[in-house]
Length: 328
Image (cartoon, rainbow, N blue to C red; front, side, top):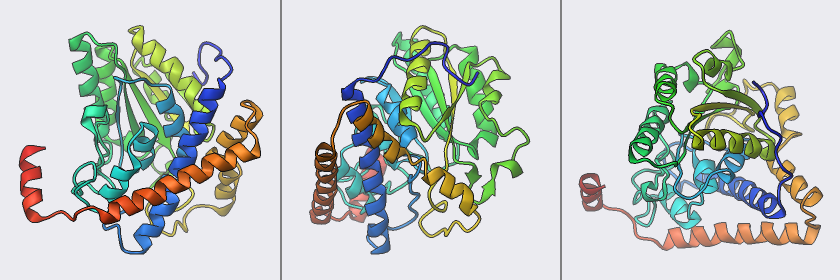
């Protein structure tokens, strides 16, 4: 199925503002983060979430405290949408002891287990079995918490994708698997990796309710996720959601993305999820230009403050690492 079974109510102004704030915060974090990387302050890889902000924003807005998420290597947006402290996120990227993982996780491994964020993962597709495990644990405990795992089109070809989803189906787990289909696994376009490019159909094949949604429309993503979450809380899980999108640049900061067709990139940039979140807040929420500018200035200042906080934080040491590796 490609649409929810029930029509969604009109979004509240509060929700519209939350969605815009979140999407814009992700955009600022990624844009400014790239600058920090170029300055040599961030080591290792940096995989921007630019162009995909509507997915994390819409999904996490449909969840509640006590739920869980599991992320991917392109996970900054998921963390921010889940409510992560930008100070601690920037500190983690800058390898400072005040970061979420005391600077040892870096860009691809931010986690906050106590807050229900099971973490980003540098292993492609590894978050799916972790999410199923968390959902099983919640079921055993008698909790109605829902676990969402974000995964990718490339990871959907891994064995753990179907194995995990099949187990979730057998056990009727409160588990939502969100495929962020940006149509490229690094530089391999989806048409070269699978015959059937509508990935939501993979769930239908094993009896899992499955939806496809425009990932660049954060309101639509929220509505379909809310439907999926309600199904899970009623004991009708798991649910698969395929969110179609397109990243705005290469796989990581040093990938020029020359393989991405210019006309397709232009098509998706014209449907930018942050622009759509802003327009929805103005058109349906009644926000005016002054309110928008105020919010954008607040978010920009928050990131600047996070950089100052992180720069002033202590560097990690080998002794810190030994303690962290044993005690985390």
